[in-house]
View (cartoon, rainbow, N blue to C red):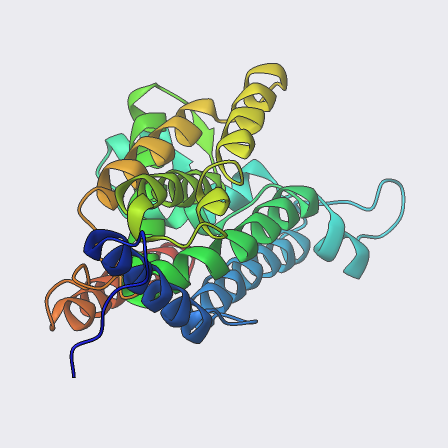
Length: 273
């Protein structure tokens, strides 16, 4: 049976509204309290942070400031440069010598408890968002590729030693903004600000902090931001009708991510042991 449109509503407006409702429904279905891929990344980051702390402790590279080093130092103390290099930090000389596995490995290493906590908190918030709109496979690929882009730019800039997941975090922020711009008309009005006013100020604030605080790897942040933004220009999304991408794309991405992580962790563990 043919139904007439409500007065003043054009077919284009109706189609846009239907698309927005479908996006809203898919987002609600995919938004997880504890997103699995994000939890996997955070678990790996925390595990390697603890491993470097235990290794420093057992190797005598940390002291307890006048007392015997113990659990407090393993959990809350700073990691030694020697220990970070042993586990895969982005060390300029080592990468130049051909240890390319350090470029992704550095993403999983952090200097102290504040460093790892801030990055994990940011990763959890952005991960819930990006894992929902890109899917687990694309999300992991975006994070790893962005982190590697940050590591590459840091290396090209001649930085002697760098670690941290902030390049990947910046990449997720950039990817979120690009997603919001690409699919603006398909997003429900209540969701659009999340990818604009919700992310852009954080990018600007973190850039300003990086320019103001010593020892922050600004090249890593910039490389991650550019990498994530560029990759998001062509990334599909399971929540936007017509933009889901190829049927086999998630499986291919999952395989590539697993290959990258296997290469990275093998390099880290093989070099240390």
